[in-house]
Length: 386
Image (cartoon, rainbow, N blue to C red; front, side):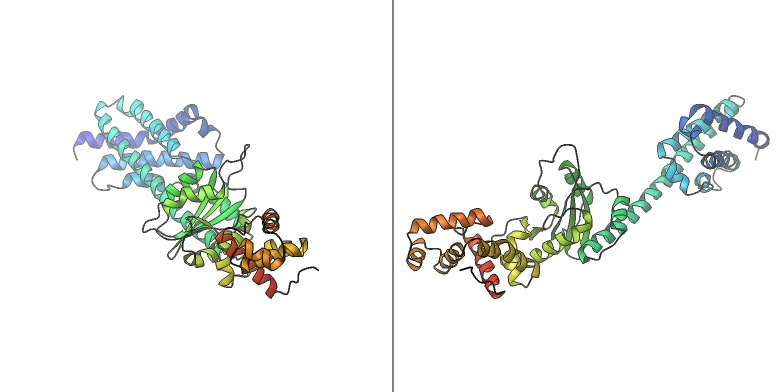
């Protein structure tokens, strides 16, 4: 080590305390966010600045001996400082420290200007590395927490912490929810799924369960009602799923009740292959016959409650006409002959049935659904009112 460098090191060590005071004063004068911080956080920031001065002196003594010495500057700060000081604020802090170095050191010794610039570069990269590692750690934690939330929704386990865990993930879907289940692609691009959902006024929780990709869709409450239905959102998300069936569960009031939607979506996904021309996505309600035949109690109850019971309570003529129409292969003439009425009377009654329960018996798919409902209702012991 030549004498001039030794003299500079001795001089730097003598003015280290003065440099620290100047840095803290400059921070207070130029950075509004620093002035408004609590005393403990201000102290932590000051500790980082002082560590930077010490680190610079050691780095100048031997730049090659400790190539990672710049990273040690941020090791002195408490971990919570990373959560309260952004990367932008950290770069502002570095800029203030370097400007003080240039005014106090380089102004008196111009040969020190280049070492200051080199060290400031290393410090900037070290800060970026610290925040990148923190973001990566946060991302891994968020992914594990999201998987836990989706798993609890699928299993139906009631968890009082579900709202708080969802909030920790930044969940903004505080309206009604629905669960979308499909085949997982080889690579799930979660960012694309979230971006599509945001463009459709929704938020999502994404989880991969074996070969299944599960997306919990939540409506974002805004001043104006969203023009997008859950089926619209599911259709927009369809390209993000792998080849195979895609089923949308019944909408529910909130994410706390999302397990009910998940049950219907999973039940529909399990039997979707039985519907040869099933759309993609398909609603779980459109798979009620297949679900009922597979033993899904929710589907059976829904068919009886929404089809058989309303007809039973309304008029025995409607229920009898529907039975006869379906038993006669949906033939108006054969039904009219069996009931001793005019075919137009059968047409009128079928129209009344459609208005009452919302399904049209003249369609092949809906006729299957209605026939299943009548059979299940009869099995449960329902008798037409005489």
